[in-house]
Image (tube, rainbow, N blue to C red; front, side, top):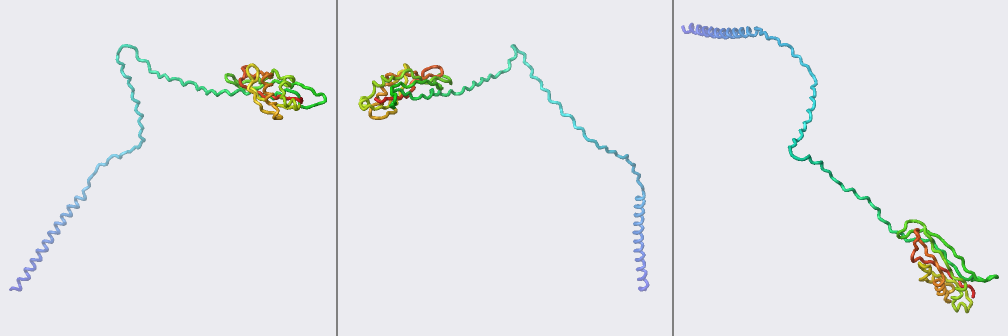
Amino acid sequence: MVEATVPHLSTSRRLGRVGVIAVVVAAHAALFAALGLQRARIVEVPLLAPIEVELFRPVTPPPPPPPQVTPAAVQPGGGAPAAPSRVHVTPKPPEVPPELPAAPPTPAPVQTVVIGASPTVTLNSGLGQGGQGTGTGSGTGEGDGPGSGSGPIILRGASNGEILAFVPPEARRQRRSGRSAVNCVIRADTRLEGCRVVDESPGGFGFGEAAVRIAETHFRFRPPTTASGRPVDGFRVTVTVNFGRQ
């Protein structure tokens, strides 16, 4: 008896498992079927009109107008409006060139005046007076403009007799001839002063001192003048006196 009942219990268990599997399969099949119906449904979506896109360059807007300046309101009041201000600038004075100091007058060179007896003995020996000359020069002086003036002019010399009167005694005793040059200042009255010996030959006989006395006693010179004719003060001249053979 026991062996007959055991196989019956195993068969019922198998059938129960098969039923469960069948139910699960049926449930899955129903689920897939439902899903298939949903996928098969077509949803109609309305088509939209196409969108047209047009590209264009933006237009630059014109600049804004300048702001208008509103003139200030004039407050009513008495009197005329004030005149515009003016700045007065003092003109610069013209530049004056500095005055140059006037150059001292430059008279013409003066040749040495030679007056006296000739120291050379000839066949026709005799005594004679040296010649006289004049000259002109140019220069400027204080208060005078540029131009030419006159040089010193000899007005009178010493004659042979006047020279013989001043021959030194020792030279007269030894009958010695000689010469001497003296430099003197011409005064406004044409006389000479301030004479000094610049040359004497031969020395030791007193020819230099004799020539100074002759020049200051007998010689006369007109002083040089500027371009305007004014005499030049303090001008010096050299005079040579020849003492012939005694």
